[in-house]
Image (cartoon, rainbow over all chains, first blue to last red; front, side, top):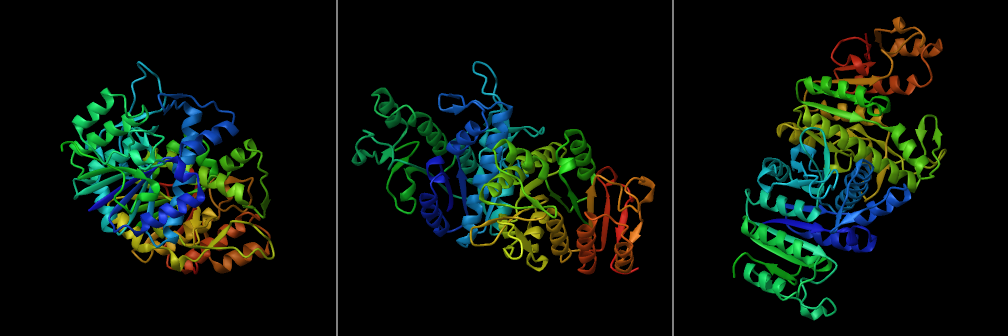
Amino acid sequence: MIEVVKIGGNVVDNPDALSAFLADFASLPSPKILIHGGGKEATRLSKTLGIKTTMIEGRRVTDADTLQVVTMVYAGLINKRIVSLLQSLGCNAVGLSGADGNLIPAKRRNPEPVDYGFVGDIDAAKVNSDMLYSLFNGGFTPVVCAICHDGNGLLLNCNADSVAGAVAVGASRLGSVRLTYCFEQPGVMRDVADSNSVIPMIDEAGFEQLRADGIVDKGMIPKLHNALRCARSGVSEVRICSSQALLGSSGTIIRSER
Amino acid sequence: MIEVVKIGGNVVDNPDALSAFLADFASLPSPKILIHGGGKEATRLSKTLGIKTTMIEGRRVTDADTLQVVTMVYAGLINKRIVSLLQSLGCNAVGLSGADGNLIPAKRRNPEPVDYGFVGDIDAAKVNSDMLYSLFNGGFTPVVCAICHDGNGLLLNCNADSVAGAVAVGASRLGSVRLTYCFEQPGVMRDVADSNSVIPMIDEAGFEQLRADGIVDKGMIPKLHNALRCARSGVSEVRICSSQALLGSSGTIIRSER
């Protein structure tokens, strides 16, 4: 089983949470891949540099200055922080952007109807699974940030959830893949105020029902969409859980069919 | 022949010079490795962030804030800029720090007599040549910045000339290596004001003589020291030349013996 795990800014930004999470991650059997975000630190650096942060529907509008900031923070600061910590835990991590080894080709998003700037969209079919094979074969654990490229010399800021999904689908050409999205909540909840309301399993029909009933919150809808697309595209198991529950089986399993 | 090439901040910082250089580099036959500096951009970002830059004998004193800056600039901004440009030139570049895959273990420099902070020194014998082999085997071209690690979770700012030398010595365990230091001058000159005064060849005895005569300038002495050490340690050819002369044979060849 190839494990693909995604963590977000809330873990990355908190040294204690990050150490605890990485110890769990390092203990997973290889082959495995870690995908990370880091939006909070990018926002902080932008602010210090006097660069305005604009978010539209949770996505960062990426002008030329912001592209420099996210490249520095995601591919530099956070990626190497994680790599050096994993190395200290005996996990032979190699930090990568999607440009490295042409791992994740992306296409700049059409500026219509909304111009997000240097933001890219990914086609999972184009993920370079030969490169993943080569890295696994060398005993390496890829640690991937969401900076990708268009192949013509342009870096593009991509969504880390989408990167994780695309990498999981790409890795599924090499073997069975379990994709785990770790975030601050224990799973997809019927009531965000009630940690006992985690929904253990969601399939396509269940997702449509939850959405029709207005039960899942707005930020969760793209995550579930993405998770369902992965489940339909060859990923054996997709789970959404707390970053503290990586080693357990709690959280919400997303399946294309029951 | 394995080509190991080092470029400094003057090329990295100038888009036209960088494009021209990378086109030359991409045209070299593989296997090859590019090592880059980027001090000017780090100094600029430090200034914008209100972090004081202190240099002692040309080496950057690296406090915790400066370590973050150089990690962002070298491993993020510059490394991924180079990787995406090389990708657009058909060169399958993979950007790495010395922490990635434990490529370059370093040791934090003793704070006595001068405390450089988070600065590391490298033992060429510890460079992970298995990783280089694995990357060459996968058809990849490593692009390496001078951020290394101590194996205990600490990133360390290292000297890019030393990194290039250590990587070249490490690579020489896999085959013959030519190491080229590209910089702003056409080679080691008898008179920095006279571009026709390039010294075509320097060996140990010649270096001692040049130093005794006070002919080579102060900044060149550690470069020559480093180059001679590489020549003694298994690197077949060491050359110092202009970044515009990568494909030619001009410049200064450094040999341990005549």
